[in-house]
Length: 96
Image 1 (cartoon, rainbow, N blue to C red):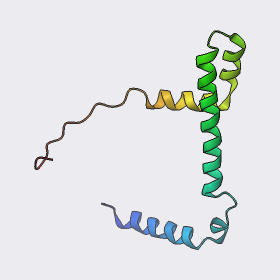
Image 2 (image 1 turned 180 degrees about the horizontal axis):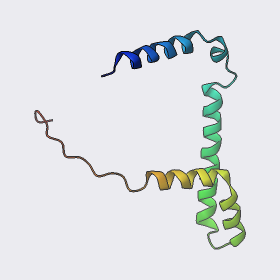
Image 3 (image 1 turned 180 degrees about the vertical axis):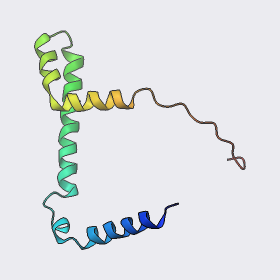
Image 4 (image 1 turned 120 degrees about the vertical axis):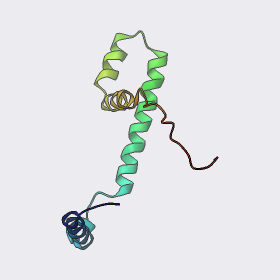
C-alpha cells in the first residue's frame, strides 16, 4: 500500500472514530438482517424466473414481473455484469 502522510492520518482518524463510536456499535441493522433480506430477494427471483419459463406469453405475468423490485434488481445486475472483461495475459515469473 502506498499513501501519503495526510491520507494515512485521515485513515487512522476514521478507523479510531469507527471503532469508538458507540452509536455505530449499537446499530439496529445487523448482518443477519441483510442476509434475511437477501435470501428473500433470492426466493422472489427464483419464483419470477420460474414464472417466466411457465407463462412467458401471458401479458399480465410480464407486466407483474416488470413491476417487481426483485426483477428490477436482477435485471440491473445482469446488465451490470454482462460482457465480462477479457482475461489479461500477464507474464508470470514461473510455471504455475
